[in-house]
Length: 505
Image (cartoon, rainbow, N blue to C red; front, side):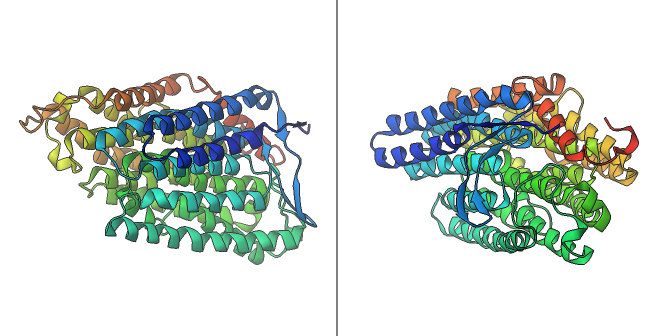
């Protein structure tokens, strides 16, 4: 049964509210820092209120749209809120509230320069993220996808030194070039089909071209999304972008950029090509192999990184490929696990980056080898780090276990037992590269941190919130925003047109 369509302007307000805030932040400037930060918090709370006001309607089976803007014949810009979009938007809007408080503490505690540009760019990034989540078609998605690229650049080069400028240029080179490949595929799709409206289960078929041509179109689209998602060999920009302030790293890894890439792959696989067509042309299997390769190799590289943020960056490269792998399996539980891992990874990884930032602002230490005994002086921070690390490794009763368990079941559903071995190996590797800090922090003695204590409360409280939620969602996966139900409904809508493999859900 087709979902009920509700015409409503709330998706547009969700996009615009932080754009308005960005303008107000720029006009407020550096001299009135309290007012500037107030605009950030007002917009963050306003955005989450708008998004969550639509949640009951989406859970009730409705799809929310606004009237399209007709650019040309067959070409429109339109926003639509479906279950997949709500999943991403609810996550991003909620975490922006927490990250805003953390950012204020970080920027004040570290006495960062260029704070007005930082908060304004952050607000634009969240507008772009809402646009990506609520895009009704490929063209609208592309517009906001590129806006996110441009808005993130000032954040990457925030320090304005030679290293930051070099990293920013690398980031633009990777993302803008891949974006043009994405655009070529989008234009090709519009010429072939006549429109690019997202449809659960996909709208392309073998009638739209040969297997080879459709495979090439799929390659162009997935490369466009895989670069932001950090899938190897397109990941090179991501570790270098860690030169940015830690709240930016948290944004890149947990809320916006890499999640936008993973969400883009979801849209391409589930709403453009669809499981049936991809099964016929075999393209998704190739993507799954790239994801499995990325999961293992990035974990091995992470083990050799002493800088904490770079280690976490390579962890993200691997963990986002869990999302890609789950989606690429083309099975019901694979889709469910992949989509829920967008949620799981966000809460765990933002906790880890928050902890890294708290350590840096408090002690000015960045390398793990320098953190012996730090847990004795910052026990809450390192305890939160430990919880999130166990979650990344897939320990039960932490949110990462639920998503990874479903991906593993999805692999067995499709007859891909080898991918289960990959998941197990990755879990052991994650323990190897994440838990040493917890061990060094709590069980190794050092006199280096005797004058230090926990970070500022406006940094520590967000850390505690995200760590606790990582546990709560591991026990009650529907807590708060019904993320698990949204992922289940989205997965069901994608696979409902094909025969469920292995008995379905």
